Length: 203
Image 1 (cartoon, rainbow, N blue to C red):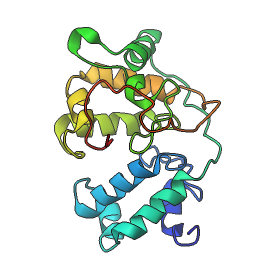
Image 2: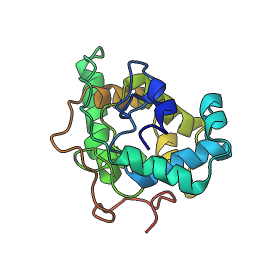
Image 3: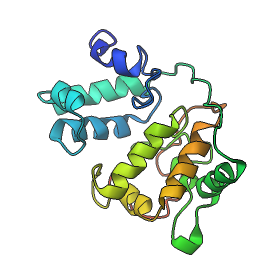
């Protein structure tokens, strides 16, 4: 499988560790169910990025599942976190949303679904560390404006729609500044009490 996914390496790294391009995310160590959902979404056009749409156009469900399982099994080192360039106030706001949410505006904490270590949960919730601020902002923006969607009920679209532009900037700044987790493993299925129903995380 490592030889078969060489087409992924130029953008995502030989072991799915990510590259210096801020818009290509780390794949390694994310739950296989999440990776599989994204591959299906690109193949079927629910996520739109022409190189990915073209590359996956004729791939079968079974083959995409094997690709997802391959990257989920890898554990390359995390890149060093981005040096913070935002103010302490912005980083503090991001940390507050990530850890506590914003109950006044109905925003649950990121950690409620992605875990206290932000490593994600099987089968369909990804880890959030090792990503750059521009990528995080881009994905949250995609959910806010409907250019990225998931299986209904689309919990990330619901959450992202409650965030302001400043909230998005703060969350992205904080997450991208975090060091690698001591344990990069994702949480077992059902071990986190999710605050809302999520179609991509079957019960």
